[in-house]
Structures are given as structure tokens and as C-alpha cells.
Image (cartoon, rainbow over all chains, first blue to last red; front, side, top):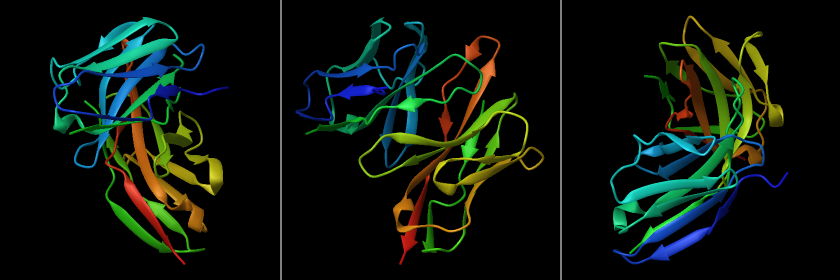
Length: 114
Length: 116
């Protein structure tokens, strides 16, 4: 079991640039989640998908953020244009449908916007 | 809406001493409760979960947690801690509404510091 795979592990970019974060969920999982972690706000749920369909994107902070899941094995989180306040660790997680199914997290992408 | 409160942002404990990390939740529907651990520069790893049945749940690394419905608590305990337990610990709830499952709602985390 390869677990949830995120890339890149680290991303440093300049303000105004486009950033794309990638995630490969665990095979067979039908839920996929994007979280953001900062010291000030802790872990925040940005958006989640069920069977590749976005279910709740109320946590996406602004229109600069967008997420897609074109198929069951791949998702992207895009920030365009990026700003320094977007600096954070972004986690992808996946889970099965069953009640009480835990989320399995990737190792995260540390984003720094200068 | 559900929420999770971890009462202590930081807990210092001497090695081999017992520890309890506190967690309280609020929700208007049935919840499923989890504890995760995060080591530096890593993702979150599941420690244990409560779904139903016995209120005492055992997890990995010698941790256990007790679900108390009347007090809406899910405190994490370990009888004897080790230096390697130094990490951030997160309590979380997942709810299931008529439309399906929601994501996990996390507490702010408790930093467990083990002192030699």
C-alpha cells in the first residue's frame, strides 16, 4: 500500500505566480480531501470530493483557489495568483465510504510564497 | 455544526510518567471520533478511533482513549510515555448527515513534550 502521494514536497514561488499541488489517493478510496495547516488557524478543510465530484468547497478561501479531480486516482489544488498569506502546509487525504472510515493523509506540500 | 476543543495547547511530561490529553466535542448528530499524531515534517497518522460499542478504545503505540457521551469527551491516555512520543496530537470528529459523510473537523492540537 503506497499511501496517499503528494507532490511536490516543497514549493517556493513568488507572489503572483500560479501554483499547482498534486495528489494521488489510495486506490479504492472514494473520498478525497484537501486540508491546509497553519500555525494560526490549525487544520482547515478546504474542499472534498466523493467519487470525483466536489461535495463541499465552502472552505476554499477565495476564488484564487480551485481544485479538480479528473479521475479516481488524481487531484489538483491550484492557486492563481499566489499570495504570501497562502504560505502553509497543504495536505491531501483519502478515505473509504464506510461509517467511521478514517482519513489517510499524505505527507503534505509545504508552500512558501515570497 | 460540529466542533472540537483541545483544552491544552502544550503538555510537558517526564519520561515514563502517565499522560492525558483532553478533547471535548460538540455535535447535534452522531459522531465518530479519532485521534491522530503528527511528527515533525510528516502527515497525520491515525492513533485510534471510536465508532461504537466499548467506550474504551485501544490504539497504536500504547495509547488508549475513553469515550464519554455525557461529558462529550474523548480523552487520550498513555500510562508511560517515551521520548519518541514527542509530537503534535489532534482530536477529530467525523459526522454523517443524510447526504453522506463530511470531512474530519480537527481540534487545534496538543503538543506533547517529553522531558528526560
